[in-house]
Structure formats: C-alpha cells, structure tokens
Image (cartoon, rainbow, N blue to C red; front, side, top):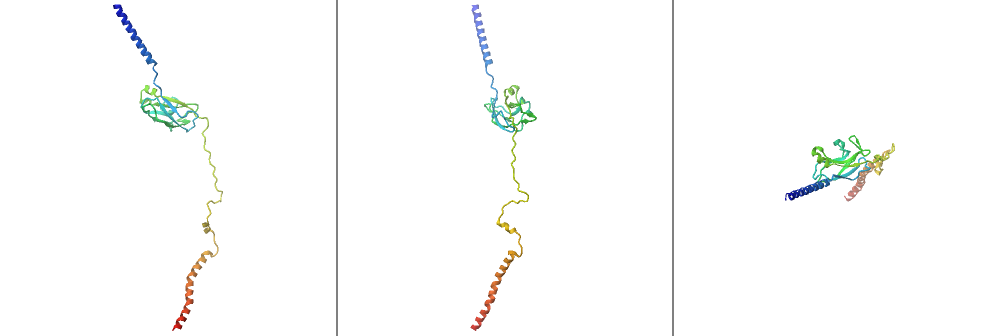
Length: 220
C-alpha cells in the first residue's frame, strides 16, 4: 500500500516536471516582438538636396515623439542628424505606424559627411523619454548612399543688349511732332486763315451798304 502511494507521488511529480519543461520550451521558443521597419522611397544614388519620403511601421502603439530623419550611423544626439529639413519628430498611431514624412537629403550637415555610405535614415525616441528597453525596442535604421556626380548648376541664359548709341522702341506717326521746323511754319498759316475768317463777313457788309442806301433813296 505504501509502495503504491509512493509510486503515485513520483508519477505526479514527473508529470508536473514534464508540464513545466514544456512551458519553458514554449516560452523560449516564442518569437520576439517585431522590430520597427522604415519604408524609404529611395536609398541609393541620392543627390544633394533631393527630397525623399519615409514612414515607419512596427513601433509601440501610440508611441510619441519619435525622431525620424537623416543621421550618421549610431547617432548620439541632435547634432548627429540633418536638422535643416532632413529630420522631424512624429508619432505612431494605434497600429504602430507613423505618417509619411518628406525629408530633404544633404551630403554634408553639422560637419558630418555622408560620402562612402556613412549616413542612414534612422528612427528612435529620445533616451530621456522612456526606459532603456522601450528605447531599444523602437530603434530602426536604413543605410543610404549618395551619387558620385557633382551637383548640376544651371547654365546662365545669354542675353543680347542693344549696341551703344542704339535706341529701342516703336516708331509712330505721332513722333513727327518732334521733328525740327524752319521759317514761319504751319502755325502762321493757321493764324492767317483764322483772321481771314473773321474779316470776310465785315468786308461783305461794307460792300452791301451802298446798294441798300440807293434803294432807300429811290423809294423816297
């Protein structure tokens, strides 16, 4: 009877140990939480000043103040990132996704040079805003490279200026008023015509008066 009891206890202990071991295996074998992913519109052959778009997925739900932008590898502070249009703060939504941002790339910023693939598009929250575990769980970066060609400068447009002494503008008939005149000119002829117009009625009246006087004398 005692042997049977001991056997049962051993069997129960073995079963419990097997269940515990199975649970440990299941826990250890569970996949870790997915790391954030950055979706970048272009990562190679970038030009200085070129604009790209980027958004992130897989962040902690509703995570606030995520710094996302162009930085050197393993940035330690704000000066390690492009602060002239190349970085922004954003938030994750209830699905852990950020809005799509437009960033302006730079070959050099804050004394850092991106030649040779020394820069990335990175995202993380500030270490002072959350625990180390949360900060590390919300880091992501994508390497970027710039093209080797130099920035193309616009070609100046040639303009033709008028030769010295040349004049511009359209010629109109009204411009004849400025031509030089000699002698009395048309002004005096106009004055004479106007004066004649006033004198002619008076001359006609003088010529008619004698005839009227003779007629009156005959009637008397």
